[in-house]
Amino acid sequence: MKAPGSRAQATEGENAMPEWEIDRLSLEVWNAHGHEHRVQGIAARAAALIGERLVTDGRTRPGVWSARIPAVALQPVAVDLSGSGDEACALLVAEAVTAAIRMQAES
Image (cartoon, rainbow, N blue to C red; front, side):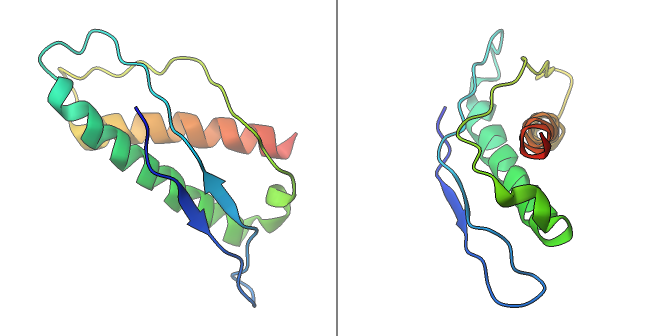
């Protein structure tokens, strides 16, 4: 699944942050029988949440984002589509991806 790229540009002042781009968010989905129609919306919401968190991090922790992060890979995220709403599923994905980006940026 591919989410469209997101961009933010640094501006003058205290809210300045480095430019960043999410080129691709790839998700592998297993055992989603009966919930296939929800996956695209969940992925789009997860991408939006990731972007919001990166903007917030850039404003509150600007030194973290001084290095380029070419790619981030993470362990599978278990999401129960039959027992969780779309927002909860998107939040789980966004938390995992954002944590992986932060960990790589801080190392």
